[in-house]
Image (cartoon, rainbow over all chains, first blue to last red; front, side):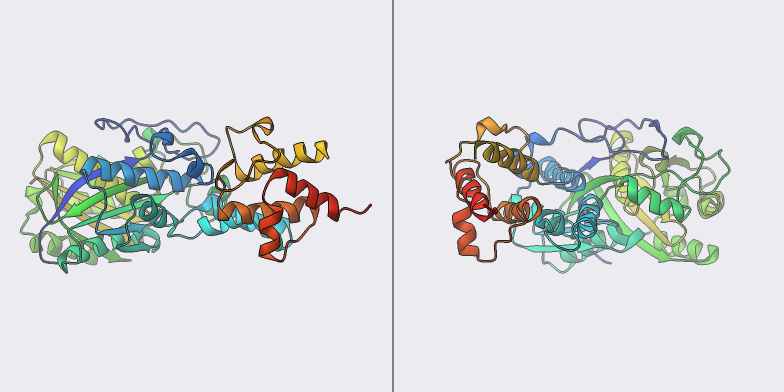
Length: 339
Length: 85
């Protein structure tokens, strides 16, 4: 996609101390008994009135407040577009609603969890809070959810429909959903600390959650978003060819990349994608691994992009590449450059 | 009647997650919507569910609902009127 896109501001709520001040990566501790990293939530009362707060579930609060903080950081009140991605939506509300159906034999169902279980609840709340009646869209495409939201935001800019788009992602984990996904072999069975993720030599990974938002526009901001490339279920050759053509498209050589932010998550079934790519293209390049910091979830790529923005700025880097995939299926590259 | 009103206040607080509100903060006759507790239309649906779940009373007519949900007093009177003598 032609045109220049800049990140004007960002905000994140994650298992890191990411909401306030400057970001210093810290290895979190899994407290057990589940292999699960929980987001460190800020005090929401400064952003949402008590009357509204009482009704919101955890992910709605995380998503809404990350979005509001991002707008605040960008000095923007009303964006021209609100576009988000989520893999799971509000699980807490969905589960409450389903439990009500079971417990009350499909009668006397509470409206609140039903309304809020829809995937676009966060978008609606942002729009209501900011009185924004413009473009509003939510993408739910598993490991490509945030990526499609970002692409849509960029297309809004490219087509001149928006000057500034608010783009973000949010996902939460619940005990029940953790259990369901554990049946699919997504998580490690033995309690594993993030620091030991790559040496465990087992399948599965750590579950994570969080919300990250960005304002993107066409005027220079804090970082330039050169592009995004998505590849679905590629072979190793297809993946490597996609990377080569992606970098060539942006006239960036592999040796120009100062930092690779890698989504390696310690799952022995799929880590080979990261390892082979790093070995072949970036043997001398600095690599940071973000999954030990935030855990695995459908929109972890949004945290990676947020981390890339922070690191690019803090370390004065020229080019940062993010490579992530979701359980071997949805693969994504983001390329960021200094302004 | 007094016991019913207290129970009703506790159920309203729990159903609507009115975290900083205690039963004694709710005036029996104060309006639940607009002023008073400041509830809105979604809350009114939640209160309908409350009546159905705890008292097995289904309010079919929205106009009737408006009158019933005016205050704790009106809700309690309505519940009492529906209970077998």
